[in-house]
Each structure stands twice: as structure tokens, then as C-alpha cells.
Image: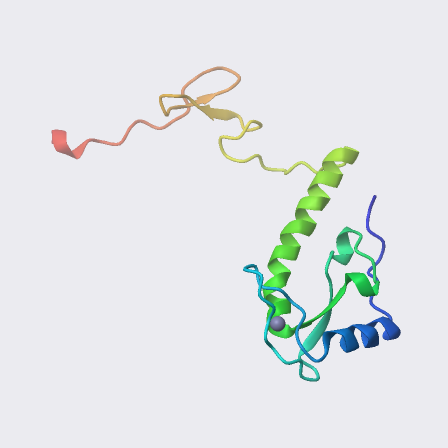
Length: 139
Ligand SMILES: [Zn+2]
């Protein structure tokens, strides 16, 4: 199921979340402590705990008020989760897009690397690698 268009928190939910936060950032650090930041006007965000892009709802339970620093730190990990979820969904639905250019040496490339380290064409088995470099010790 594709995520619907972005859902922002309504004004009553944002007010309730701010009251619950008690002017402190609600983010938890990975080691379990809560961020000590005091929320200043304009320097906090209303964040979806479960990202909106993967179906997190715009409810008070899924809302946390976090400082801009915590928001910036959280975004990359959210992005990883969102992208992975989309890849899994696409694979499940059979709509996964195949890259145009196969990864060098990957299963769909024309050449493969043998156990000896040589590159050979899959179709013919002919050697594709360039001659080994000259061993300077023999000169
Ligand atoms: Zn914070």
C-alpha cells in the first residue's frame, strides 16, 4: 500500500504535544537519555515518530516535539527506514524498478569474476580482463 499524501499535525494536536513536552525536547538519544534542550520558539519541530511516508498517522501518540538539532540528526535514519520500506513494498508488489546499468560484476552484468580473479564473459566464457600488470620485480 502506497502512503497517502503527507499528513501534518492539526493545531489541537500540536498544542497538546507542546503541553506534554513541557518546553523540553522529547527526543531520546540512542543510549536512552532524553535530550536536555529547552525548546525555543522557532527552533523545534513536530516530528512523526513513525514517519509519515511509511504510514505513521498524525496523532498525538505519533507526535513528538523535538529541537532542530535532534530533527536534523533523526532525518538520515528516517530516510533509511523509508527507502527500505519502499524497496520492500515494491518487491512485494512486483513493481521494483530495475537499474538501467547493471552493477559491475553483478548478476546481470555481461562479465563475471572467476575465483582466480579473472573477468570472463558470461555468454562465451572468453577472457575479458586485461593482461596482468607488468611485475616490476622481474625487470
Ligand atoms: Zn533535542
